[in-house]
Image (cartoon, rainbow, N blue to C red; front, side, top):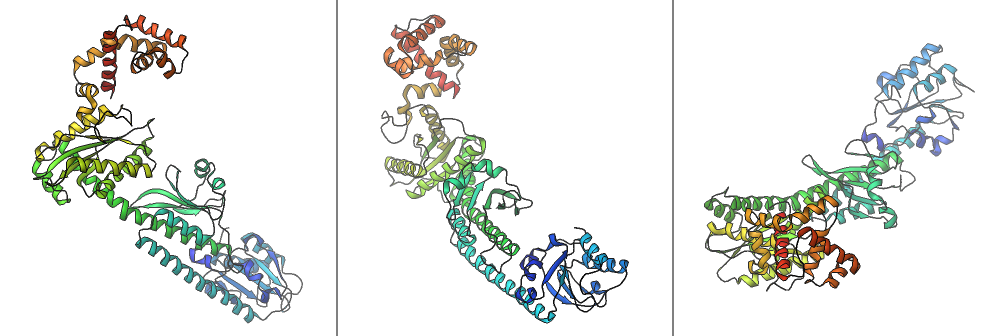
Amino acid sequence: MKGSPPLHQEALLFPTVARVLDLDVVSRGLPEVVAGREHLERPVRWVHVSELADIAGTLQGGELILTTGIALPEDREGLARYVRELADVGVAGLVVEFGRRYFDNLPRALVHAAEQRGLPLVVLRRELRFVAVTEAVHALVVNAQLEELRSSEEIHQTFNELAVEGAEPVEVVQQVSRMAGAPVVLENLSHQVLAYDTGGQDAQVLLAGWESRSRGVRAKGRTGHDPRTGWLVTAVGARGHDWGRLLLLGAPSSAQEDVAPEQASHRHTMLLERAAATLALNRLLVRDRESLERQTHRTLLSGILTHAVTVSDVALRASALGVPLEGRRLVGVVLRQRHGSAPAALEAQARLRDFTETAAAAVREKRLTALVGALDDEAVGLLVSLGPRDDEHTALDGFASSLRRLLLEAEQPEPVIAVGSSVGAVRDARRTLVEATQVADAALHDAPASGARSASYYRLPDVRLRGLLHLLRDDARLQTYVERELGPLLAYDAEHGSQLIQMLRVYLEQGRNKSAAADAAHLSRPSFYDRLHKVERVLGVDLDQVESCLSLHVALLALDAVRR
């Protein structure tokens, strides 16, 4: 409404006009609202008793004016000016007592002006001691401010302790829910729930269709109420980079009868913002610190692989990171997670980050010394530095065992762990990392529980023919061989949308057992046999000949390597 200044945040601590009118000391005067009823939620900062018509110049806003009206103007213009000046300065309301100037009704001009300017206008039909009203309201204001100070101190102390202790997000969310008496959810920017506390409600109901519900929740600024749901929302992040939102769902407006809804809202806002700051700080101190370490390690590993960093610089910078490389045996390790389908970009990034941190945790658990960092969008690399008394197999086997256990606890898939040949000098570090990368790529299509390898990780002898083909995948002669053997079948599949290449693969992987292959392909035997005949016609081969099948099987393995 024109003439009403915006409320300051501290104004939300004060009682409203409606709250004042409900006080026993005021209700004795039989108050009646005659104008501005829709603005009774305005906060009352102070109660001021005055009979002056030009009182507005001494006010600051938020006052509730008590008057008998004995000195108010008699003319319409004067009354309108009086109301306009009070409204412009931001007065909370005007209370006029009958018995001195007015007896049964107020001047229509006064009522009309108050209604037009949205100024609450109240009449008291019975005389009151104004001093009793001022004492009661001022006590209410002071008590509210004291309560707010106590609440603020409790919130400050609670979340300071959580920040110092490095509390997990779940602990912070639980604390917010307990103090607010309502459900709380922490979500990421994709509206996926990271942590929550039901506040005593049913978890399935709380989280049902969460993403779609959350996407519809909008609040102005970093913290605000969503008008449609009534949820209180604040952004979580630091350094100009938000990574999530903290939401308070359906908080009760007040836990006490003498606390105004606006005051409770302010307390919840303070609580939510303090919790968000704790979450952001803990992420900076813990996760980002690890990320910085990982970034430094990744830079060194990348420098080794691309020759972007000299051998002396690698040794110096690694030593400064607490990973001595000189005079040690170095072993390259590459980790790749098996994925059923390609995840979204943000999910893939988060998954790789978590995978990298898990690998670093396994290194620390086994007290190994290693550089650990992401090599690309899908792989994590390690350069393990072994001392003269360290047994290579024991160290690597222990690391593999710890990594698999940590991933299992985090409900993440079992990875491919590939190891290169150990080297005795920093200048040869690239060779062991490259070999580990090639082994990992070749082993990616192997069964997770394969018993072909001799240890809990893959080395070059374990990948056998597949490894050889992977090493030769960039050779034009191998690519020509693949096209010669499988080109017509690949073209036929592309043109007809068929899956004959897959039928051929299943047949060869089942050791040329047609019945077993039909079962593996989930087809009836006549249907599967018909597809095999099509493969023979398209390729011009006889699948009953062992040599033809061997040649095609090698071509399929080579195709996997080339595509990889």
